[in-house]
Image (cartoon, rainbow, N blue to C red; front, side):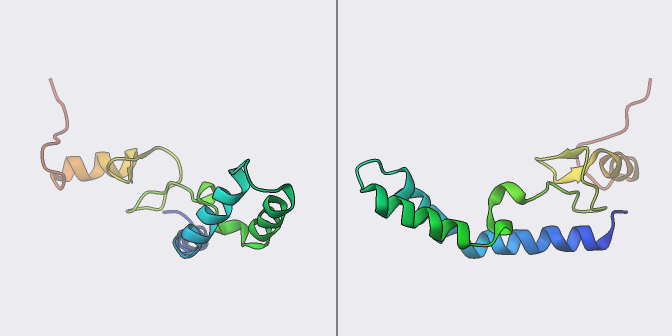
Length: 101
């Protein structure tokens, strides 16, 4: 099991990303528009820098929904390889069985 503080910090980041998604997208659109004046684009860049750093999508860590483990997480299932193996052995995931020969 991962540290609960790390899991909570990641959940806080997810919440911030949702909150500032539209504002960040609008500012980035202004910054990348080469037809606008340089001063206007620079002002948008300053506004973007004033937003919380944790509101950037890149700061979110992929974590296991079951254990909170940060490594070895399958994106499609949102669980780690270890939790996947345990759940498959217990028969909790439909269509997946532990191989034996």
